[in-house]
Length: 392
Ligand SMILES: Cc1cc2nc3c(=O)[nH]c(=O)nc-3n(C[C@H](O)[C@H](O)[C@H](O)COP(=O)(O)OP(=O)(O)OC[C@H]3O[C@@H](n4cnc5c(N)ncnc54)[C@H](O)[C@@H]3O)c2cc1C
Image (cartoon, rainbow, N blue to C red; front, side, top):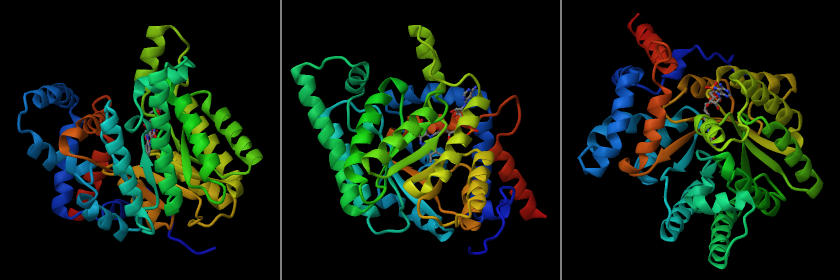
């Protein structure tokens, strides 16, 4: 096996090698402002109103949070960020991030844009994966109905056939381009329908290579067992099983809905249980890597370290083609840059869309970076450490 530098997430010199002093200062102020819970709460409450009143907030948003967390407004607008990441051996995952669309015309437009991201990625080693959210191309309410097992009327049946064709069109474009494709995981009350689509696409397009990846959310208590069953099913039917592992992004919403509707919450009882299942899923994937592909989508240092350790334990090279690490743009650079420096395969989601369309995403990122019990967020403390190191 090739010799690689040691993996060290505390190395802020490597983590921020891509940032000039001035850029670091800008990130410092951004994360300092985001650290203030009251400010984030006030601004996120005011944002929808500002949009409704058509206030000219775009330049302010663009110069601050948008620059930190997004690639640009279009594929071409992402070039600079992509080149920057690739200079440090980090891949890009172009993530077209419009949300909450409802019309057939919007779904068709979204499908066309996702296919453009696949064509852009074709044969470009800097873009190892493409990605889409099913709700970008299929109506949420329709997925919900399918999930409940409800009978569709004739109009809904026709709508569902169009929706399936859209998903198939994306997966087929990925297959023809030889471009791996993630299907993101969403709320549990539409996830069975998404899983069924993802399984169908894997069965159709993963015969020769892992192209379509489903996403497994380990904050759900039933997902580790589901993943093992799905793997066995793929083995039996003779196609590659491919997964992106995540903890899951909708915990509060899931718990609230379960309490409101009076069904048992699908979420694990505590954080330790999510961590345990996430790490068990990593171990399972590494043990079965001969027959599957995995990407670990996490900002958790322990889980990232664990995957690296599991690879060493099994004598797997850092550049194994079917083991990847992934983070989001603007977050956990200490993980992404240090993993890449130590020779692992890493990519970052690069969300892109016009500024206004990105607001819901940006508000979620801001909430994630507010302080917990008055402490500095992890991002802020890393930036502080690096600024101190540079001044020393
Ligand atoms: C590349 C990438 C792709 C992603 N794709 C998706 C996707 O397709 N779908 C999706 O849903 N999310 C996705 N996410 C988001 C992800 O699910 C997490 O919300 C986020 O990454 C935080 O988890 P973490 O592993 O980084 O670690 P940590 O910060 O250690 O964990 C935080 C997570 O742990 C879980 N958790 C926290 N408290 C509790 C508790 N009390 N009980 C039980 N569980 C708890 C929650 O899931 C929470 O988000 C993605 C993230 C990345 C980096």
